[in-house]
Image (cartoon, rainbow, N blue to C red; front, top):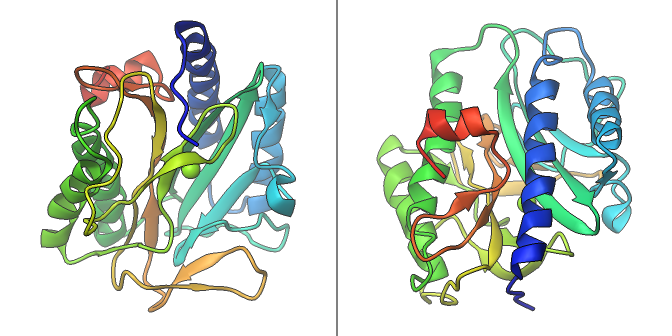
Length: 259
Ligand code: MG
């Protein structure tokens, strides 16, 4: 179901987004060689709860942690583990969400662990940039596919693979609401975007193939050719003009030139 939010509901989602943005920013300081993905998750949960929020991922369809922590070829839904120790040169994607007074926010970042290759840095930067290119089309009156087409047009020249098995989504009191928001062109133009819809846009980009494999743990997806993968996500508010990015801090919005 698609939900159109009231001004009061939007304000709560804005507050949720700001808390989540802060959590991501603070968590970034913990990413370094030698830390386990379990430790990162534990810090993440502590930060979320310190703001009086609930970690929306924990227990979601049985997911055992507050953050999905996905390393290198892991695309999404990495399960935090004490045995998985980050190494210099890795890239790590952290996807997490908060519930604030019943309202959800969802966002993901990919970080460098120590010094990484230029190839991996380019992947991280271009994946993030594809989000900002995509959301320029996230305007009331446009269709969902306008977002995916813009992301695809931006990413394709780099020769990367856009993950198709997983897509963005509407968000509100539920983490996953309609519509689905693909990061690629579809045959249908998709739902028309309406003012005060809130959606999570989340390009997942592989250096190699678009294809992914679900691993034996029943959660984690890896790129089929095991090439590195990056993920960047924010919760946004659809408006008449350019969207408002709910899950970025004011200084980050300024840096990226968005509302
Ligand atoms: Mg999401």
